[in-house]
Image 1: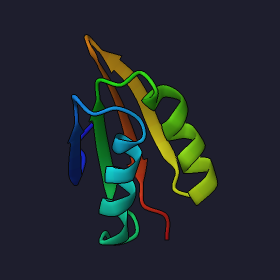
Image 2 (image 1 turned 90 degrees about the vertical axis):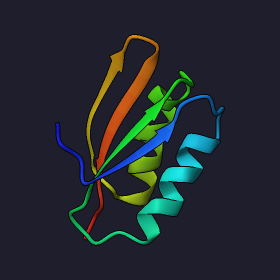
Image 3 (image 1 turned 120 degrees about the vertical axis):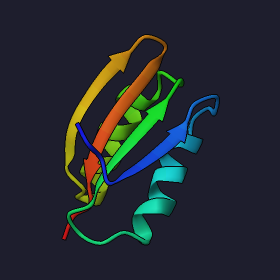
Image 4 (image 1 turned 90 degrees about the horizontal axis):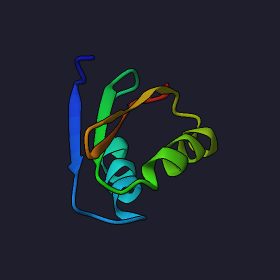
Length: 76
């Protein structure tokens, strides 16, 4: 999946991947697709919860070897 913006939060622990995503999302236009990559397993639970709380749709989640990857679309 080709994202417009990629956030590499590998090596950081909760809540940093979500904080980095939230910071980036403030500057993005609606419709922007953001990919978040983290090694913290907490992303599996934290990202869907954050998306539900903020109204930004979670497009997809997957695990790639040691990483957890999620795609979020900036809500309009």
